[in-house]
Length: 137
Image 1 (tube, rainbow, N blue to C red):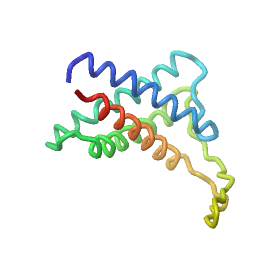
Image 2 (cartoon, helix red, strand yellow):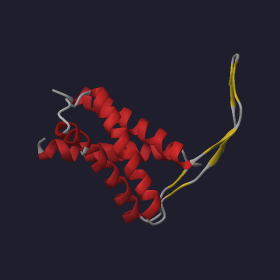
Image 3 (cartoon, rainbow, N blue to C red):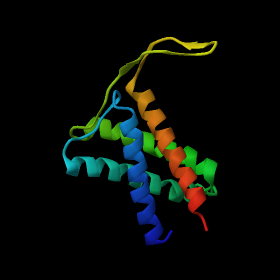
Image 4 (cartoon, rainbow, N blue to C red):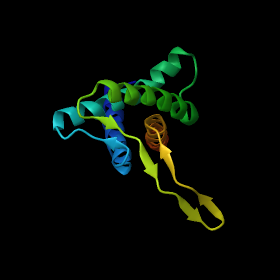
């Protein structure tokens, strides 16, 4: 992977991760300090950049589905570790208030931090996978 493409993927991954984590304000407490926020997002961007080399090491072709799965796994691990050690970054449990759409009703329930991390990782990897496929030459 060229340096230019890698840098672009890290920056886009950081922006996408910031967008997704900002969507879940109840679950994720982002750092107030710019340096810690940048380091948090940079670690996520590097995790997304590492997905294809890990797949290549495992002799699997890096395409939409494999990048989505490996990116989700790697980003879940990175977010979990950051929850443990990063200053002013926290993943909290929250109460989903429930929803009703037509005949489908979802009752309220507590969302544990690991589920929040997994959903945010999947959404970040999904949007990044779409970007990678659309950006391909």
